[in-house]
Length: 372
Image (cartoon, rainbow, N blue to C red):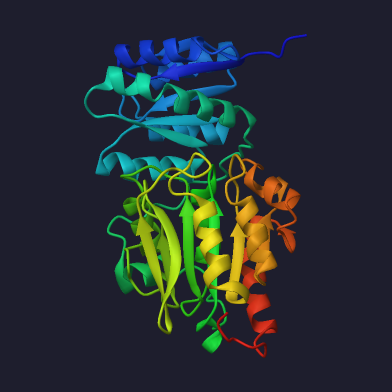
């Protein structure tokens, strides 16, 4: 018996985009476009009548914008949503808000050349729809906290963290250690959850989140306004310091190197690894080679197997590794592969990962901190 096709409703105010997306979806043997709506009010009736598995959702539409509609949808009838966002600075900020509200993933819609651009993105669009159809979505209990508008700087961090109890200082434990995080689908919010729980003097954190160019700068700025540690896009050659998090820029690989007594970030172009650029494999492999037993690794939600082999290499080199559990993942792909490769020391719910990192650091305070 053939598996049921993934049923998709397309929501976009552009007739051209609706037609193109429907065409791309209907060409796939495992999915079909069951409806296309020009605005959220029409979409609401389609969703009620057609019961789709996934919807694609534009942001700027008449009568109700996509963000307002998404917030209502995730409160009343949570379902997998893939955002279709114009690749602009405002588009990046609003897309991050959509992910915060519960959208599974997004497609960066070209600002010009939409017809050719969307056709070229066909494989990416359909793969994200497949992933969304398997994703866990949760009801939005209340309005999500607003992303920081002018994120960045100590004022932004203090303001963003004011409502949270301050975690205990780690003192000098952060001097030599580095935390490495890999994430993909669902990872923007999972990474935020981890970083917001870290104290201002936490070890340096290096992050590879699968994200295209044009979005990571806004993502880093948003996190910088919410966290006690400073968060920014990584810059090639900069020193890696405690109390700072470094995010791989979209379209570039991030790795760590040594320069004398210091660790430095290396940001480089190159071929995709495991079909990704940035790739978790690249970051984790460098951590195993350069940081060794002074590394702590975290694998968060995501589709595929990127980073699983290198995480095992990190473990063999002496790192301490945590993996997000299935129940709290949006997509239990990368964590599952890390576990299957024998890379995990512990498998934990998302909310327990940061506290466990700090607990491990305190428990190992007396251990030798010599660089490998």
